[in-house]
Image (cartoon, rainbow, N blue to C red; front, side, top):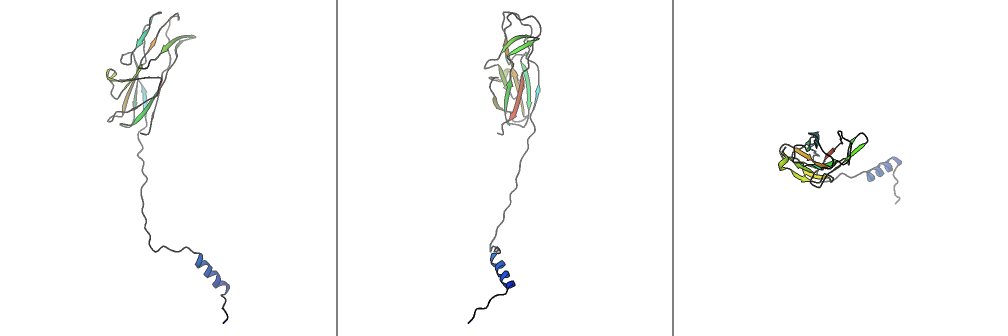
Amino acid sequence: MKARSLGPIAGIALAVALLAPQSAQAQANASIQANADVQVQLTAVAGGDLDFGAVFPGTTRNVLPSDLGAGSFEITGAANAEVTVDLTLPANLVNGGNNLPITFGAGSAARNTTDDRGAATSFDPSAVETTRLHNGTGELYVYIGGSVSPAGQPNGTYSGTIQLTTAYTGN
């Protein structure tokens, strides 16, 4: 018996049927949502300047973070969020071409989640500090002191800039 050949159209139809994906006999689907809770942006506001007042040659003047002359900043953001506090500190206070060295010790800065200098926790202002904002209000207060020792500088007003940078850590 002779085998019967398929016509060209029937052969193409058979090839397409064999190559076509087979539908599944049993199938299940599930979906989930992708969510993100965007928090409020951090803000930092400068409070009072670090003020040494009148200083005299040969006499060191110290301002502690708990003193009223200490500089201050207020940070506001998401309640209980972890943030970094990074202070850029000047090496000198300047009056024209004259420099007055300023120093910051390991405890020259302090932080508190309420505006209470006396109860603030001290930290080293030359290192980045990681802490949390107030768990209800989202506030953090930072205080900065330092020391100057005039020695031969001409009289006048000397100044420098202390810069605070803060950022969420994501924790």
